Length: 190
Length: 297
Ligand SMILES: Cc1cc2nc3c(=O)[nH]c(=O)nc-3n(C[C@H](O)[C@H](O)[C@H](O)COP(=O)(O)OP(=O)(O)OC[C@H]3O[C@@H](n4cnc5c(N)ncnc54)[C@H](O)[C@@H]3O)c2cc1C
Ligand code: FES
Ligand code: FES
Image (cartoon, rainbow over all chains, first blue to last red; front, side):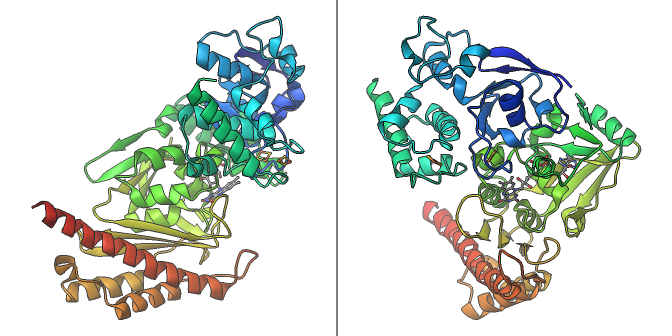
């Protein structure tokens, strides 16, 4: 079947989708967006977390057909999503740019495109919250959502919001630091 | 596989009537795990995400009519006052990502003895509203809904429309044993609700029998003891011997198995401990409620 939906602010189409396929598979294998990770395929690890109509979900547990007509934000579109949130204007992230996403692309001449870093991504780098990086995309999407809903989260709020994301490397302390850092920078207007 | 995408409740019932083997998919947090791991290859998937009615709830006089697909997150955030036991239970389900998708309809559909909604529904008192295109709507008391391990009273052409949960008229508690706080399938769980209106206490036990069950003998014992002591009026502390007897009878209501998550005897023991604790917490807040009113008067 064909699935037509919005990914990172742009309309996309995936063809020859098997009816039992997950949204995660469609994103990675059909649209070429490997940012969302596949670690467990059973909702346990959160590394496949995306926003579906704004809500963080495990994309491995959403049937592809359930995404029809809906709005998905992946880690590749997070910087753009953050910009849109603060400026209220952006054209979304085209698929080729999302595919070619590089952290260094911040001053890309195509201003407003999906390259560059969201504040929460920069905070993860600055706080040293990334080791192997496998858990990072899911944690970024979940952290960004938390800070959108709650700009000044307590430690308990952060732990709760990230309780569905497993990390086998960092021991979580640096991840906590990163979210606190992103929150502090935002409240200082940095 | 075919993907059926009804846009309304009527269309969903018609699709289920036409294809009784179709597997409904709501949040997908049970169904997709089975498909991803090739444990299930349904001929038809019946997507319920576009049936808006299933995501709504109505506060009635005595009960809340909770749409089958209302995600746990909304129950926790918006129905805590009316359905405190179910809200507490919802908060123990998995993780935010899962709670944003999964709901009580799916929990009832799976009917796992470990499902967290069940003890809370049993304790609060609830009816499951199911419907078919051929026969219309019928109400199933939640006590009769669970018919075996992962089996329920649904007929092949039926879908769950909503659950009618009694609005709390007293304190409710939910307790769950697991290895950590998040992402834990219950080793066993216990729900308790005080119903001062009818002067009764109701319970629900999860993961300690082939189906979720009430501890009926324990409830009857406690109801009699509270009546005899005039406790609903004088709100005196419950005697330790009464609480202990209640706990023992709750343990006795279990019919648990040994499995990877725990042994049968551990489960029986833990249910007793949770029964005593939840009773104490709930009764103390019942007593506190009176003190608060008296203070204000
Ligand atoms: C990582 C992880 C952790 C989990 N932890 C917990 C936990 O702690 N506690 C817990 O209770 N559960 C847990 N679950 C299980 C699951 O999240 C719950 O059972 C949830 O309530 C299912 O809801 P859903 O909408 O996602 O159901 P779905 O997967 O969409 O459906 C589940 C079943 O119900 C049927 N169904 C759904 N809606 C209807 C309807 N309206 N009418 C008829 N049948 C219907 C489906 O056909 C299917 O058989 C966990 C799952 C995962 C993946
Ligand atoms: S891959 Fe989806 S939660 Fe692990
Ligand atoms: S950095 Fe390796 S899993 Fe988190």
